[in-house]
Length: 219
Image (cartoon, rainbow, N blue to C red; front, top):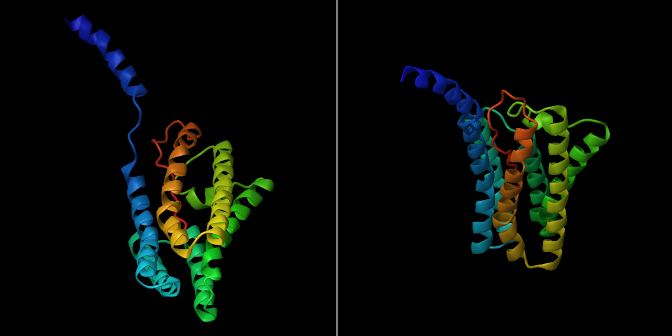
């Protein structure tokens, strides 16, 4: 009986070694908090547009964006580059929308921000730099090839979002554009982020735990 137990031990150890590592919840919680804070202004924008109009919604959107950034700083002790850039663009183009009473400015804002992110990421790759590493490098540990592929994928995804926004605001009503901005972009981003899990784990150093996909909310 004792021999059986001794022989079984290596098998148990081997099975344990092959078991998939658990999700890093310490890594997941800040992302969920960040996603909620970034989604909040979009929900405010949607509700205000439904109850009033695009100009009232824009004013509320700008205020909610400022509050979101302040809460992000208080809760997470830092503000990531992308939400900060998005917030600045929202204030600029939202201000132009209210000043000139022309909703074109707030409608092209997603095109501007997504095109900017795409240009920075894809342009960096042309010079051999995986700039996404500077955004998520404190959360994810990837080999250089992994950072390059992740940066390329996100750069192309931002191009797709910019194109979709142009098609929608030019060809559909304001209500449809707002609805897709709030309830369409987020699911697309989450689905895309999930598709990157395999890449994150494939190019992670052997000792790293299973990664949670990065999610960038376009406000």
